[in-house]
Length: 141
Image (cartoon, one colour):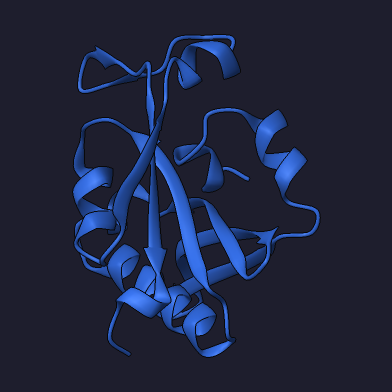
């Protein structure tokens, strides 16, 4: 839970989406260096609910390796697409775009409406959520 809270500050929200989701981890010498939770959305779509890497292991490629593995897993399982929601700025947006995710819509005021406390990133409050999609028919294997 502690690791997942790095990606989503609401334990209540995390506990609400864990049932029915698949959880993936990356480890290095028995140390968990990454965790990812993916939930089915229906009709071959799956949503990446959270992906997190402990601070001591960030910027070492573990998150990218885990995301690439998850993408390959779902592509090979016959999924149609992966979706993710993230803030409108910051390293997370580029992280997903580097793997082929593209912005498909904006959920205006998502973070204000869905979290009791304001969420700040680099001193800037998050308001809107960008919804990104990776369609497997649009990408090379």
